[in-house]
Image 1 (cartoon, rainbow, N blue to C red):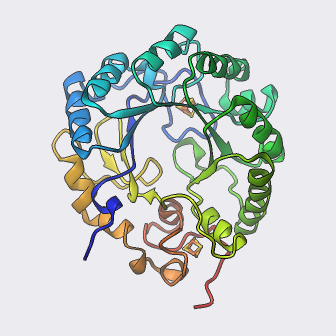
Image 2 (spheres, rainbow, N blue to C red):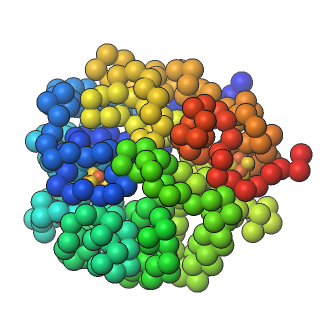
Length: 340
Ligand code: SF4
Ligand code: SF4
């Protein structure tokens, strides 16, 4: 069997540098705390992780958290990755740590993209979501710093009932920010996101309708996280025309390394599959049975397993796991039922 590229190499490696963060967002996947965990990767362990990613030659390494800037080795590892030829994106928390000087330094150290969160079109909605007033204004400042040094921006938005009515106005903001990508995250109930009222399958379709319209109207590059059935929706809408995107999903083009070095298929699928302190990340990604099964949609269960869109979409494996305890089960938040 010829293995496709995602069988041997991910497109994105997320590395949670720390649990520390000065914000207290309601939906926080990382259940961020005020302080770093003493068990977080050491400077040398971080170097070894970057060395291994360099051997893959290609994936984007995303420094995430918590707030990656709260890790004392952040700047050292950023420079180390640059020297090793590893492309890096950074998703800082929008706090006073992200100064004009810090953004300029990131640019000079070769940061490929800055990921910033926008969770409301207006200060009131955004700040309520992030738990600290003034966060929205801080975000606008950071966007300005990035624009000054021509650092590429990705805007990340977590969609919930509290901001969904502002979808179009958030799109207008993203357009004004000149972001290279707008990534819309559909909640999986993990971390502080547990207990938040999720959209129903029908509501997902209605949001996809609006997203499709917004994408066309504003010519925005949009991708979804943990809602791969938007690709199915797009394919149906375009009547089978080629839909851009490489069909990534949990463990398929994506791998997540926790602050303790634990390896997961994504930050939303809490099935630990080794630790970079003792295991080879490349070996786990390519050969661990869990990762292999997540890349094999023909063996998914229920309606996802017999859906004609299973290779393009495949459903959110993290949401299937959160709902049923089985990552190979059907995504319960997809309305579509295949005729085949
Ligand atoms: S900024 Fe990010 S890491 Fe910090 S609390 Fe909010 S979601 Fe969690
Ligand atoms: S049934 Fe599963 S594979 Fe098919 S479109 Fe829905 S989520 Fe995707």
